[in-house]
Image (cartoon, rainbow, N blue to C red):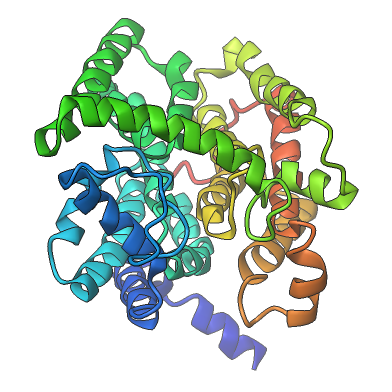
Length: 392
């Protein structure tokens, strides 16, 4: 039985990009069809387009249309437009498939090796399904961060700037693409393109509304995000982060998250001092992994579906190192898959999820441990070794 299982695992099928493409397409379709009539988030998203067209406030309740509130910027109206102008159920299917394909293409068109790409696509497949069940744009945010990094690697600074500005003006998370600024060989060009794209993309929603309306809505957006930060602190389905673990385990509401964010930023920034490592692709890719984890771990707005961003980072971390990973590292990957990826699903014990994982934001715990180890490695390890898959 064991030999038969091993022979199945060795089949070329599992390493075939066509099979993985089909799998990710199916995940998008399955998620859309299973949530076709429970698609509140998609209703919020498509509502952004119609509310901008009608010049209605974007950050107030619309109980006749959907539950909860919109927290996406005015630029998002144009991103969601192709999915809002078609019948609702058609748009829902298109949306989920498009999100899945955005991340798939970001990975496939990256400079990650074949081994890395295949590992990322398999490791993140279940988390993709979790995110798509909620129709979340976080899948596209992961794609934008990855695409930004590799655009800079390919010296396509104008493209990188475009991705940074799109991500920033839709959900703010895209601003973390600036973390790759020091890796650019054309910093002045990148800066100029950032200014150009910021001006253009800030203004472009005015084409379907008005300048006064768009300027006002950006102001309202910042106000809404500030208020949401306070509401997230002890929310059961929000603040699933390192900040949330400390907040929910301690039960204390009076301290400032800056006490955690400040040392977190310091740990994140220290590897930048290792200038001699900048020339190693493995070092730069590990910083990409750090960014993908950091943006989720240190945000009170992090929710379960946002972990498609963080787990992509975990997979990049594991595969980027040019040294042989230890049994401890493999154990961390198993823990991340079980506790982070599987915990929201029916494959995980409901009692543990209800009594421990959700109340204390433990979905974030394995990612936090991996990120801390990543920081240690980036400060002390040499990334100049010959890559494990140098013959790929």
